[in-house]
Image (cartoon, rainbow, N blue to C red):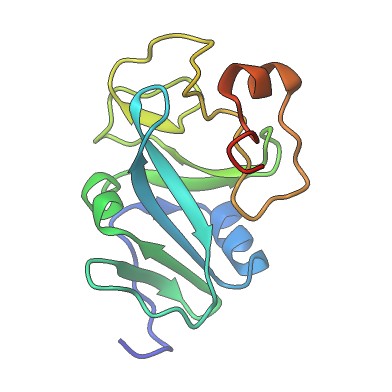
Length: 152
């Protein structure tokens, strides 16, 4: 694919998400990892604008706003909507209206199994984006999850 191509993903991307990708330097990767209160969690990583996808990853978008989709995420995202909201606490990307993940937690970060209810030690509802070092999660959530103790 040439660098001036536009490739649309098999899911919707809101204007807010595109704007945030551009603000972050032009490239963000979404994938899925084990974890969260429902078993699987979407992950987002800021990348260099000239990042070359690894085998199994797909690059969507256009120059200035590339979205790299990992192999696990590419199986789950078709038909969904990727959004970004600065009003959420913490401000974050989120996948909404995903027809492939009927079991989701209330914050929409984790999916796969029935939501076990509030107060889970695996909760990721207040987990900041990997590039956001300014957001401070609520103390109650930090105590509940032990957030920050593993990084020390």
